[in-house]
Amino acid sequence: MKDFDTWNNKKKLIDSSEKLIGLKQRDVVFIHIGQNIGYEQNGKGEQFLRPVIVLEVFNRGLFLGLPLTSKEKKGDFFEPIEYKKRDTIVKSTAILVQTKSFATKRVKYKSGYIDKVLFESLKNKVAKRLTLIKREPLRESILKVYQNDNDKSSFYQYHKSSFIDNDVNIGDNTKIWHFSHILSGSNIGENCSFGQNCVVGPKVNIGSGVKVQNNISIYEGVEVEDDVFLGPSMVFTNVINPRAFIVRKEEFKKTLLKKGCSIGANATIVCGTTIGEYALIGSGAVINKDVKPYALMVGVPAKQIGWVGISGNTLEFKNNKSEDEYATYEIIEDNLKVIEK
Image 1 (cartoon, rainbow, N blue to C red):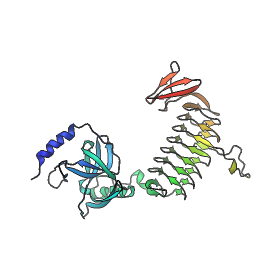
Image 2 (image 1 turned 180 degrees about the vertical axis):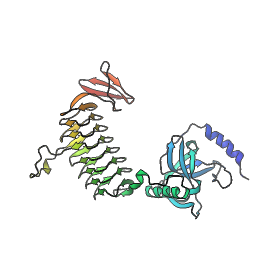
Image 3 (image 1 turned 180 degrees about the horizontal axis):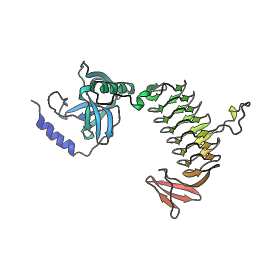
């Protein structure tokens, strides 16, 4: 006879708890899955626990989970898997038929995570067997997952029409879309996105969280820090006085885009310049000199017409002070001092 009374009391305590553990896809978590009816999966022990793979996080309080069992099971609705728990590989079986949404309050602790390639395969099998997930190809499904040669725990994605040279380092969860080329010696951080028809390198360093829109070439000599936005068809140069018949590779001038700055569509950044932190370059502007942090630049050649906050919104000042949801700002000697909240 199942002990529903003990579970009901435990469930009341779980529901009253305010504790929420942050989750992401591929996490393996132990949850209070409970004492359930019939063939529904039950938890074990006094805490009614069972490991579950996080398939999708809907919001802070709800996620789609796939329960696991330590028992070896075979059949159309079971899939053998492995997940990493610290330095240990744990063998288990995913119970495809038990896939459902769970409250985040049920999570007791994180146990480990599942390999990216295996995770994508598992999601496809869940969709195929249960048709709970739309079976038409998702937009991201046309990107193939690859392991970073320099970091075996890092995976990135690129479209089959793109080319990735040897001796390239690409960070975890970076996506490279159609008709792009990453040349040798280039380093790209985590969580970056490259639109179609982009060229990077050779020997270019790009930080994490960078968004590169369509039709952009990032040449040798350009360095891009974290969280930079590059608008569609913006242009970099790397030689001041180019000639088709003169090789000037030894004269490349460094261009530096500092953390959080944004470059508008069709803007041109002349080589040898530095764009300061969180500066905003308007569409079509031509930058031929250094730009101050947080400066708002427009025109040809570009001129500063104001200041922007970390939010990207134009700042309005009273007694040389302003603020947005990220920070408080003060103009001191024609520069912006930032006091983060």
